[in-house]
Image (cartoon, rainbow, N blue to C red; front, side, top):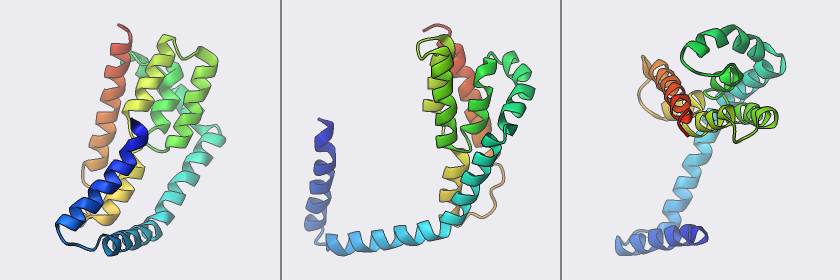
Length: 168
């Protein structure tokens, strides 16, 4: 079934463009051009975030920070082994995936810690990446509380996810 989704979307877009009497090819070219411009504008920010996260992780600072923060995480019911995952997930999907793989290797995927790690990874987002993309193209230049609220919501989701994994 899933192998038909992209052709269905493609045919649907063509039918809508024919119905609206619009040139689908020109619209596609315009969209592709704006996507390239977006990537040129956003690339330096993304590269900076990716490099900073990799340095943060490779230097061992993320592990030290995770060890420091883990007692506070235990108060919220989050195992110490997941602290580094929670710290890296808002910054980098690839870095968090590396931590997730390590959790699975050490603890297994079917353990409480493995289930919590899966829920945390699957239900949270790379807040800074998404914010970079969104706010680079929006007219809103004052971020205000957007990132702190997104990080708070992510943390609450981690707490609730680990709580619910206790009953699975």
